[in-house]
Image 1 (cartoon, rainbow, N blue to C red):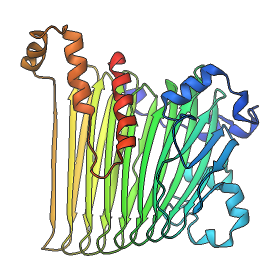
Image 2: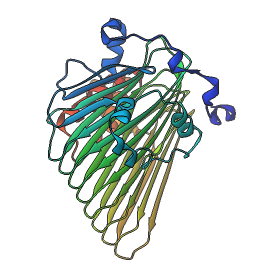
Image 3: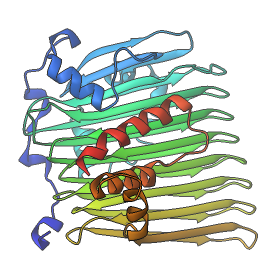
Length: 389
């Protein structure tokens, strides 16, 4: 990978506004080929769900919800409907954080608003999809998710491109608020075009007794992804878990991680990263900040190198400001042990099959508290990716 490619930093002005794209007005106008792509990214219209949201370029073409207790709207409609949204809008992510948040604040291409009312616990996931259908556009979305006191939400977001789209730019700002004793499970599956740039900007605030579980999956080639969610645990007993399953093929630069600030006694946090390089670069960052007594936090970065052409960089950081905290980290990068391959080959597998099976096992991260249905979807995505490893 050349030094020139390592410095890639996309500029908004180099892409066409998504609003200029000619997009369909309903899901029925999408082709079978497009639906297959959406399903591969985890957006399956036939799977059980509580609500469904689909945005194509800058236009929302599907937004429907089923149960009582769930609000699901295009975020532009929610901004018009509720004055109180100003209490949350750009409060977990500053609008002036960087050029990408400023561009989104100045010219929004919609996004989704999800709110689960107090005490409601949704059985099935809410699924959303942010889809780039037109080449060379920049899509700027802003999502707002509020889980009220004692409520529970499983949210699956699929982000992908048209099978014929190779290049473009996606900026996704997301703000999550988990109220007292609420629980939010958030799973993001990326399957972008090979020359696409992706810049999620995420902020999370979790109150007393609340739980936030995040799982991020990217297994296919993409030009660059830079994501570093910042989570604040502001109430006693709040908890956050971040898990990432990452494959960096040749040509990809993935700079991923999370920061959790533990700001109240008894808070818990865990960051788990599994990275495989098949020729691309993967940077796994983790930052835990202990700002209160009696907190517990752990950071784990594991990398597997399958090529001499790529790179894996693990960057853990722990900051403690009290004596009675329990904070730890472990990081390791290596290759597949030859004896493991030989063991499987002795049982009838080819070397390629043995390697693929070992990689799949390495990527099968089990996140504590993740609903079984979400875990199955991640397992299926990892299994499908085996062929390309």
